[in-house]
Image (cartoon, rainbow, N blue to C red):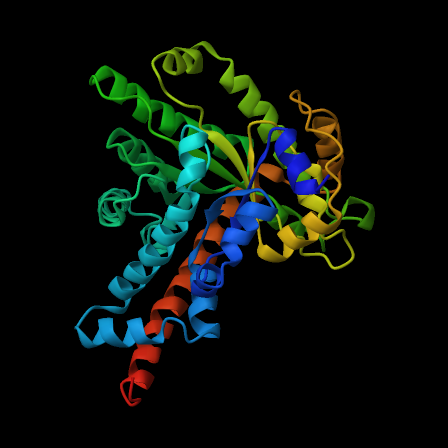
Length: 362
């Protein structure tokens, strides 16, 4: 049996962390849905920047839209919405048959708004309306400003993918924002069924501490933090507060493992996918990781709901000098900066392509 099928039988959804025009037009995404049990898709500014830089598939649209006087940012969102709604159409049957649990795509608000709650709220609503797509998440980072935007967006009925979460504390803050948004909807007599996922970034932990710890601890911290978050998630799901909103028709805010591509060439290329099988959760994987897992993944077991050995081993990391709470804050801050840098590169790339294409007979 294929590892990807085994993964689904163990209760985990597998999403693809990639989007390009070629992925759609070549039939590759449709193939991944059929052959590798892919049931959703995520994207980010870096993915789009690479897609636009490395192909000419977007050139004609970029040229036309800039000639119409649109800004480079407006052009990007039109390109992204076009790609993502095509992907969403492919995923719509999955969306319907799973009662909206799977079959989603994700579009990120500008990372430059990470510390601007009101700007994020307005942009989330605008993008969701513009896409007019039932299975589209709007990605909002779990920063302090983002938390306010998440609550308000959920209250407004906008499905949200909360990004850049690293620790149990950050996850709990994101879950609180979601809960508050749903509770406000219930109090206002609105439908409680607004979907959300909480994206936990995994591999960046290991990259961050690699030079600071003994080799025996390499490539372990990200998995430990994920195990602790899964324990927190399980505890939250059975709480009286959660059970109350679930009885009102709300849906669980699912855990999504992100940043699951192996960065260390000495480690297994399926390290994080093999280790983070958790019923009810989602794993979004880069294309390279998907192909590796489909070929030789080892979905042998599932995460313990009580955290297992993670608390004890985390104490060993602390003795190695790792301050996990401070590092989680640093990783989130660095993540915002990294996405902002990719965003600025993306917008500059679109503008530069426009200048180049202005001198070419399209």
